[in-house]
Structure formats: C-alpha cells, structure tokens
Length: 268
Image 1 (cartoon, rainbow, N blue to C red):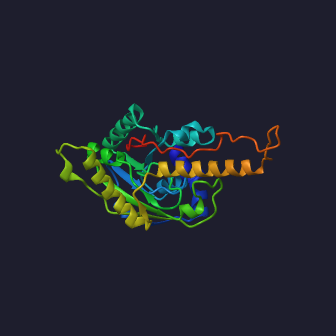
Image 2 (image 1 turned 180 degrees about the horizontal axis):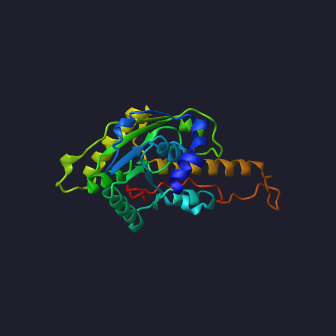
Image 3 (image 1 turned 45 degrees about the vertical axis):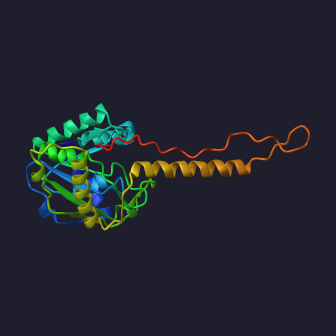
C-alpha cells in the first residue's frame, strides 16, 4: 500500500511535474513474471523515476545498504521494499543474491544498477557480475534500461535537484538460455554482464569505460582531500628553529591513497 500511495498520490505527481519523464520501449517490459531491469546509474533520481514510468507493476530494487543508514531516506527504501546490498562481498552479498533470486522466482520485477554506484562523471562504468548471477540462477530475462537526463538534474555530488526533463528507454529483453545447464564460472558471468552493459550503453548513449566506478570515486575523493590539505598547509605560517633557520622537515604531507583491489565484483 505504501508503495502505491507514494507512486500515485504523494511523490509520483510531484516527480512527474518537475521532471516530465518520457518513455521509449515500455512494451519491452513483460506484464508478468520475474524480470530484471538493468539500468545505468547517474543520479539518486534514477531510483525514483524508473518505477514511476511502469504503470502496472511494482519495481523492487537491489540497492546499497548504506541507504538504510541514513534515517531521512531509510524509511522510504524500507517502504519501497528495497533489498539492501552490503558492499564488499562475503555473506552479506550472498544473502542479497539469494533474496533477489527468490524474488524473481516469485514473479517480481527487480531493478538493479550493475555499476554498483552512481557515475561520478556521466560515463558508463564496468558492470558488476551480480546481475549475471541473478539472471542465470533465476533463469529470467534482463531488460536493459537507459536513463537520460538525471545527471543534469541531480549528479551524485548535488544535494538539491534542478527541474530537467528525463527520458527512460527500455530495450528488448535479453535471454541467456544458451548458458542453461552449463557450469558457470567468473568468465561466463563477465561475458553476460558485458553483453548487458553494451545494450545499456546503446540505449543511454554514454561513453563506456572499463573501470570500476567505486574505485574511481575513491580516487576522486582522495585527490580532493589532498588538495584541501595542501591549501591548508600553504595558509599556515612557516616556523623557524631556535637558530633562526628553517625548521627541519617533518613527514606530515598527505600520501596518495592506495587503490587496493578489495572489491568482490558481485552485487555491491
């Protein structure tokens, strides 16, 4: 009930007024049965506008668990039935995968952003293989989705959106029947994921880069922190030793962050 009230009474009408979403290819979304919607992710608005344009079905998202840590938005995602994914892999990601497969087998329409996080610069980043695992284990088709306009409306570092028209494009369902009965491994998961990402790229018109978006955002954050630290150091008056000379150097300069390969390349 909460989900439908938000969509048609409280939040939905406001979103339609501000962002005027248009749709292409809605006929490619089956009216029933378990389906995965795999979309590009440039803005927080993607979570709101994608379900809005599908009139007769509820979209349940797999999303990062950090959303549940913020009280001012946690209530919304809980009410919307989002399945939290704890980034970093391990048992938490496996539990999310199992919940997603169960939901698909029950006939739910599940949305997922294979990049795992919002694009920091508008480019389409390498997909994580969780989307392939869901599709192959649940034996359901994947509908690729290209969302255009939300980056301009609300990029990841912006707090307040600006009114901008958004377009959502649904591609033809992708099926992977040729992999049924075949032992799966990381190479098959990667091949399936790359095929899905190619279709998303074709729909969204984005430039593709074979990098992990989460790591790129960490590097951006580290560079910003180093720049701020450098500016702060430049503003401080220099100190001198008792003999009147320059103070001996100390090893306090910020070091660049090391990008350790800790990502599990799963759902997160």
